[in-house]
Image (tube, rainbow, N blue to C red):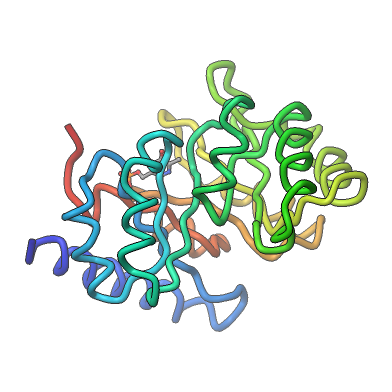
Length: 225
Ligand SMILES: *Cc1c(COP(=O)(O)O)cnc(C)c1O
């Protein structure tokens, strides 16, 4: 238990030190604690500590933990991000559970999300990222880089999705820096404030290339089964 809090403090310290080198070039990087595969009791330790931004990669797993966690911590103002792929038959459920969906990557899912949002009243509260398949990898989700701009315009203008940034997972077998640079450049070109990039192994580098949301799991909670 103490291990998690000391890991957390260490990560925060490293984030601050990377940020200080940037001289305010980008907005403050925010830590998403990715709690997938860890139970409620463990997550609660970080909630008690005052951390409020969390990530999960599966809708059903998130439902089994976060409906209760949010209910039990109403004053904590928790913001939950979906960082894993979304199937269109789970779009409605995802909107019930998550505050931010980072993996909008195709027309079908955007249309579904938009339709459900229009049926609800809290339309402006939900925020979205477009996931870009920045390494052009066959097995990875995310929209193709060359289609990202057009897709972003369509989501924002033709639909009503409040897109606040781009998200990527660079190829595992290559240095991530060129991909971080590409995503940041694309964000700047589209006038998007937020880039969600960088995980336990590369978040420091991601911050130095303009990440504003980093997604750290192992570095806080330890190894997953
Ligand atoms: C699991 C996961 C993370 C966290 O990865 P770690 O290497 O454990 O920090 C970040 N982003 C996504 C999309 C993930 O699925």
